Length: 135
Length: 292
Image (cartoon, rainbow over all chains, first blue to last red; front, side, top):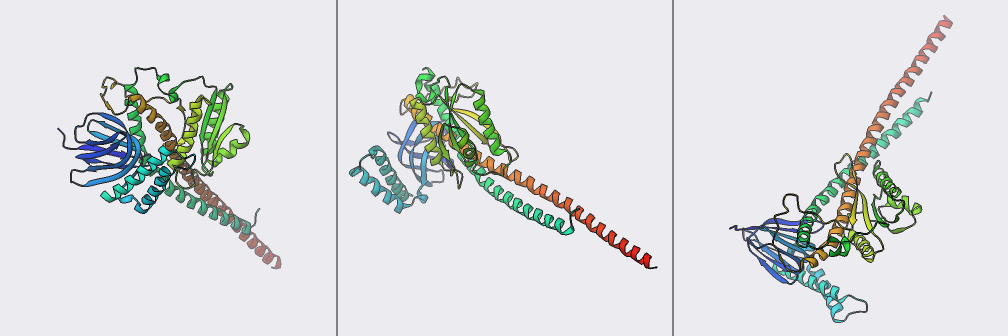
């Protein structure tokens, strides 16, 4: 029985973290997944939301992620995401503005706009704000 | 025989040149270090992606590969898309020429195929803009600052769309990879139809029973385009790093050559000066002996 597992979070441009964790909350496509050590092998698409994990020294790391993939195998959690921002990196003012723009687009869609895309934008802005507040 | 002043002038200009090439080498070295860091930073994503794709592919491998996903469909390669990645600048030895030559050879080997070209980097654009008719895109601003993922995404999406519509039958990527500082390695890869990475030999039996949150086929459909986009992005990063390395090597060689020329001309200058001194002495001596 392992006490910890490895969590690896990578975007195409950089590796955000690769460290040990005791617990993680990951926004999968169909809802949040809680991960503890010795989780069963799992593959899923990633949704938009706030990802957080707790290290063995009881630090909580929070970040906003947007789309990608999640693999759990042999006590290693791999998160491949398109966009990821640590809570400390979020520009809250910018996120709030993005949220307003996206909300306006969803409530009052202009012609030719992709509503599904606007919804994702909205969720992403919200996730960034949430992550910043939690972190 | 050139005069002393002329030789001095030449030496001075060689020294200026050496200073410039040395400075350019330093600049490239600094840029290379940053580019290299980015190549390394991007590696975990690509590697994980590959492993994941291999695992998903294994889970769906009962079906026929061609029917799994449009991006895996093999067709006779009659219409080929070439993605040519060169650099924006020269002064890097045979860096750009090698890529261009490889593209020409590739096309010459397939006389019956039609080629569409997507040109990334100014040098490749300059060469093929006039010579090739069917150009789907020209990009000359990709490498100006840092290589951006969004740029790779835009290009990859367009190419994927064309492939899915059946406008093209295969996509090849011609690019210089960064292998070592001394020599870029030319690579020609087929990125579409995609080749599913296989699990390492000897481990085929270790099938993992995944819990699939989504049906495997759906995951595969989501993974494949990402995989192709990632490949292109990596190629661009590698090419940029290789370019800076090639440029550094070329400028280093240029500085050495300038140094050699300076030594040669200095020797020449001393010889000319010695000759003129000798001549003056002879004149004085012969003048004195004529008076005596």
